[in-house]
Length: 249
Image (cartoon, rainbow, N blue to C red):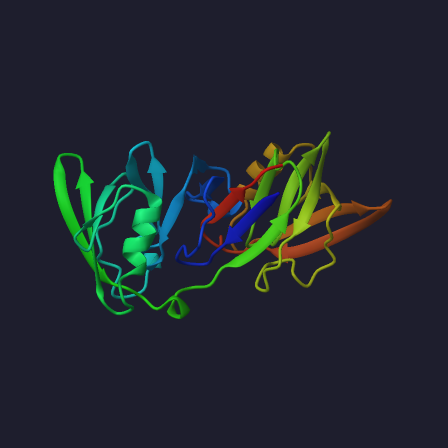
């Protein structure tokens, strides 16, 4: 089973321990080509779009949302990927469970002080604890399958998979603002061509799709149970980071 969590601005999640997680990011996050993968317990610092994971005996900041994607007053908080988290509001934390307990003990609106090790420096960053209802909400979908050879296009609204020499729509994502939400696209549709280019591999499709400018027209020729269809939409702006949590197959 694969649980995919799609978020528009700041990462906000209650992550399950012992799962494989991948965070897609980069210049074109909508192609979801670049992943960091960890197999560890984790804890989100939702105010900062941060993800802290257990790495051996350390708690490491594995991902932080760019300041421009955060709400005030969190834009100036200097949390960075690679920081080692040592303390929360004066309490030493050595595990994800201790981190959860220390963070949970802080009242909404109170100051959260996080002690960090960055290289040879010891740093403290502080920010007010947010009320969860004020944080961006996630869209969650559950997908069953091996999860290999897939790509996620959240702004388009589909995940795709390679099946033999065919590229198929694996799932239509439940995202109201996606490009194909109101179009005749279904799981199992075969993508025959993209803007006139014959599609024979997911890698090729992704490269061709990435070359299309935001706002430019996109045309798919698809096949469904022997019927040929034409699907037209405008290349949407990438939605942002995508987190994938993979559980047992």
